[in-house]
Amino acid sequence: MSTSYRWSTLTTADTAAWAELVNHLAVVDGTEEFYSAEDLAEELEDPHLDPAQDTVAVWADSQSGTEELVAFGVARLRQSLDHEGNAGVPLEGGVHMEHRGGGIGTQLMQKLEARGAQKATDRYPGVQYYFATGGGLEESSARIFHLARGYQVARYFNLMSRPLSWNQTDSPDSAAASTGGRQLPEGVTVRAPEEGDEKAVFEAHAAAFVDHWGSAPPSPSVWHETWTSRSNRAAVSRIAVDASGTVLAYALCGQWVDRELYVNLVGTVPAARGNGLGSAVLAHTIEAAASSGDYDDIELDVDSESLTGATRLYERLGFAVKHTSAAMRRYQQPADKH
Image (cartoon, rainbow, N blue to C red; front, side, top):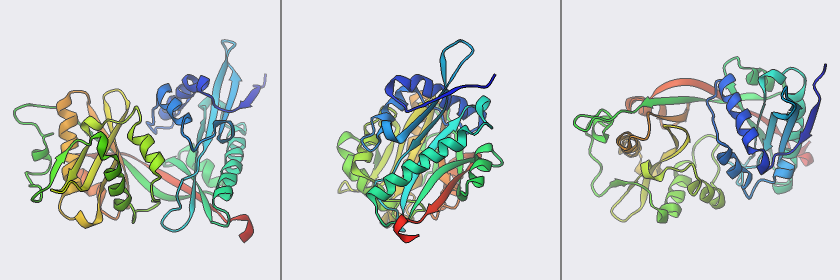
């Protein structure tokens, strides 16, 4: 008997089912992108997201007689143009392993692309935009699916991991051990970010990533949401400041998986590069995470072609590549330029 599907949108009442599906995909597709229902509920509160128009949910009857969420999709729009003047339209979603091959994924992407195109052209009329989506691991079903829809691999990202353990007398996770005892420049200190540092770190991040691939000036409202989110772990994040209090470098962390810390952002303002500050803030983050006893591992994603040689920096700090995934894009010309 064929399965009957019901199409709707995501609501806060769906977050438990949404989390179950997302975590299923994290396992079967090997992405390890796990989220709780609380994390996903927070995403639906994004002021730049209209769940009634920007999300898709697909339900099917389960063996227990209740409905099961078997596919989801979200269409977003970056709030600033990137450094090349293009608008970015991130699309995310997935289909449960047992419901693939029947056309749900194609219908899902058609809906997301249509909505994403509308958002881009409404906000940025006459501007070239691109759909951006995750391409999964090499030879994954996601990679094959998106290639067939005209997407191309735009960049590869390495997921890197480092185990944490703490020995009070001689720890390889101490900042001094991680950096080989390298001293900070005179007048520079490393500390945890405080509530009042939000604007200064925001400005440092905008400067640090201005020349990075795919970067766009961060939106203050989106930055604030990230800064105050439930996943934020300021206690083990670190910033480097000079004698005047100017933020020179930062390592900002979050947590989505029990006993696993994730480094969301690492950056150094261009004028301060070459002084080892990126290594320093991350080394102090490693030390703080290890000494807290709350984490067994620390992970981060890095652009494999990073112009700052970030992969090599992280390897020197004890990180190793777990897997490599792709970021995929499909460029679209605005309607008035066809």
